[in-house]
Length: 249
Ligand code: SF4
Ligand code: SF4
Image 1 (cartoon, protein in one colour):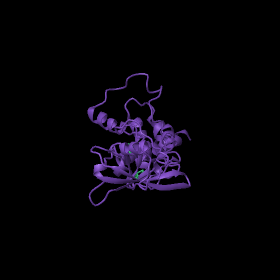
Image 2: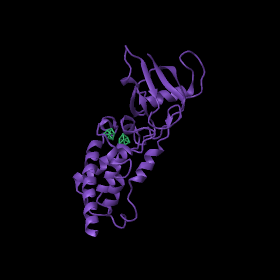
Image 3: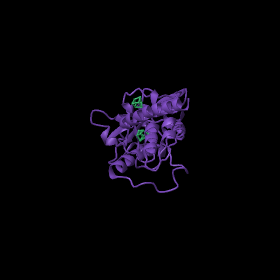
Image 4: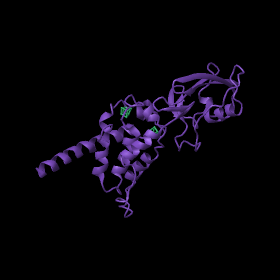
């Protein structure tokens, strides 16, 4: 059985579709289909074209590199099976680069803004925290923290977010959730510093609470719970800051 992979290719301001006819293979996913095209970059009309540029890393939904729009939904190419997308009635699959990040080429986008946002919210354990191994963590907290650590900075949540775009300062759900991970971590000593960083321009206050992010996260991270938790923490922090200012005056 043959199916068609329709790919949005090109660079910013010069995007175009190309269609490739591929033979269905049991167990094939979008990455293996793209690799087949790479071996033989000939369109369904027999035109020889340049091979399609795309990014891929771990092939097991851990690195986040192969995020793209597959039939208009942001998801990972490595875990999207061809068999789930085609049928006797429909043999067309459309893929495109994520639209909320600067386009580099074909299916490759620049997600560096996400990593910059992680820096903004101090999403790491620093020297201040790491002078001992911290207190014991109860199993409920440990399980929740583990869930949050599975974020792979893939960008799907930002792609689905109506508040996020190429020009926005909004850090988005993934960085809010990572901010929560490190501010809630029993090892973290300076929670106020981390909560304050989530209240800066582009922080939690820019979230419109539409909850699209949670629907598309491949890791099923409870992003809206993280947003609600950070929301509560920032309100508490605002009062704390207000009272400490009053005391000083
Ligand atoms: S809740 Fe809505 S506005 Fe907030 S981060 Fe998620 S998708 Fe974006
Ligand atoms: S929170 Fe989920 S969708 Fe967002 S970057 Fe992390 S893994 Fe991807």
